[in-house]
Length: 598
Ligand SMILES: Cc1cc2nc3c(=O)[nH]c(=O)nc-3n(C[C@H](O)[C@H](O)[C@H](O)COP(=O)(O)OP(=O)(O)OC[C@H]3O[C@@H](n4cnc5c(N)ncnc54)[C@H](O)[C@@H]3O)c2cc1C
Image 1 (tube, rainbow, N blue to C red):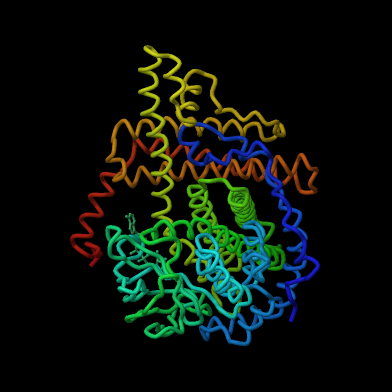
Image 2 (spheres, rainbow, N blue to C red; image 1 turned 90 degrees about the vertical axis):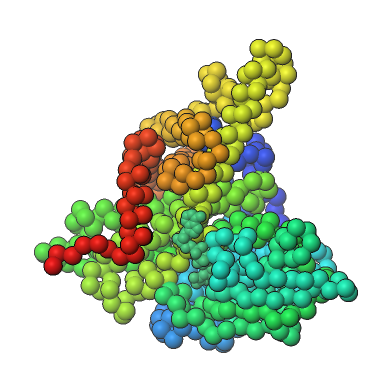
């Protein structure tokens, strides 16, 4: 069994992050876009993978390919049987795949977010269920201990979690509480001795049937009935799990109910402080999104490899189908989607690894884009394979089934789009309010007026006065000049549209879901496009062998994005929303389709 832990590598001191000094850790690129500002310091040049990560990843990727590379038939079998055999999970333990992000001093590999995402990308080129087993453990199961654990909690749990002796799971969802996570009913009541009694049932818990440690969210008394996170061990009296769910995809991974019946939790197992559970849950989910994004990119790379081989080999009408425009269009689109998703996921990882304070909006964008992209890719690859794509004998249908979950869990893409729209508007609103006060003040007390502006309002004002930061100053290749102009133009369009929405709807903007989705989609196209632009420009500056194609991808993405952004902005004022809403009302009230040709 290949072992990931190379002692020579294990002792390499963590290298300082290779971030440009000018990185603004106090600012969010995505939110800045809503005030028309392109936060160039955080975009250019495209970040390099750290030297230590590069060193470790070489051997890790090789070991993963060595271990998983010959198991295609097994993965197919385990998908049908809906299980991963224990000796295979033991193999994952032996390779150190449960200790990827745990500090070296606790026995882990201490990978950065970027390197961790790259590992999940590699496992996903082989099988999504494998990625989910190790990803749910690291990204969400034990992440709370890393982010919010006390020294004592870390010392107690992390060494066992690093070896995989303990596998972790994240228990938030309940039958009555999915997207609305704040409505959970699982309760924890404090006893006179300070311990807690936990009661409730969590559903669809990844690793539920194989985990020894759960991060559980429960409603606690006091602290205004807030939510608190607890570390709970599977072996404690009253903890049990249900049967392995029969799922559409990622079938081999374990998904079960986890129940808590009068479970006594010692006070020292409160995680992140009493009443702080919602913040803990959101912090875990935000910082875990690179794992999901990395996995999606790995899946897309497999789809591109399979589809390219199929297109080159399959002949129809006397020629390889790869010679036909409608097949080539799909191959090109898959390549654009994969490059764009990869550029975005690793930009996000760079923000997290570099200590950027607020990356929640970028994390949501990266999750939404990568999960949508792999589903487009899967559909196209399956189509290129024709009838074979539909057959279980071929891998396409499984990848399509496996990737479907990505837009549902860890926050549905609908909720995350609303989050992107609202978090951007919130800052734009703040900027507008400050701007209004400041502009009033400027006439009376000019110095005070300018002095009170926040970063965003300042940007807005400089923009309004023509000295804005809505231009990219970095020197980009000439071939990207048009792409640059598109993103600069639409950052301003997003800012104007946000201002319009805020003035027209005020606080009730939160209920304008059709419009929020449009704003979010513009922000997604802008942020993803800028990451893609930055990467292509940096590859060109470095003389990368495929820089020409990378530049072409960035240019193509910008043109496609321009059409989508133009439509989204236009449809804020000219749309069929009212008609659609009325029709939905009709069908929902009726509960069925109203017509028949009979
Ligand atoms: C295979 C699998 C593994 C999972 N693993 C875990 C795990 O390890 N731990 C865990 O805690 N949970 C897990 N989950 C649960 C998952 O996170 C939830 O399914 C997800 O959060 C969505 O909740 P829901 O299914 O209840 O859907 P709902 O919240 O009921 O949503 C249903 C639909 O309504 C939409 N919707 C809901 N509210 C709104 C709104 N306000 N505006 C617009 N649209 C809305 C949603 O986007 C969705 O399309 C898992 C689920 C699955 C299927």
